[in-house]
Length: 253
Image (cartoon, rainbow, N blue to C red; front, side):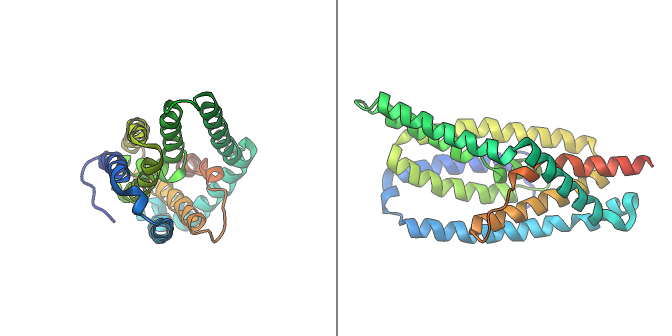
């Protein structure tokens, strides 16, 4: 695991990777084979699985055991199950996919409208980059963990993915892709700040439950990234709230 440098380091690394990747894309991006990018994504997905598995075992943390005894895994499991049911009821995954489809339709309309100029391509590149970089659970989970003080490991993985993606996008759309780094800065910075504020209020037991639930969600994301099986990762996100809330309720008994 990457040691904690300072809160927000992951955001700085992630934004920097987009800027560097866009620069490389403008210069030599077309020379990077698609097969190489896919291979790198597969390797990184395995790293995501390992980090998720490591964080997922936080249900055995001593602070959590003091509150819930030997039922830490049960509390986290029930939080994940109930969280998934809530996510499915709210159609979180479906709504996120709908947002992506809406973005693609908007891009298509802009291309038709500005077919006679290069402005359409530049705007398309910016919107496409924002959707790819900001609509995804890895950045959200990574920024949250960074804010909680658990280090920027997850955001470093996201940074590598975003860096290679920005190379490909910049080679096609140009310098407008680099502008998406500003949106990513605001998005990841906000989530990191929220994580930092939450981490300062939550006791160790609740934080352990949050880490465990987040690790298991990250593990499922890694499996999805490998293409082994597509899991409804976004639908499980309510568990990040339910897990520490469940521990808090048990502590009141």
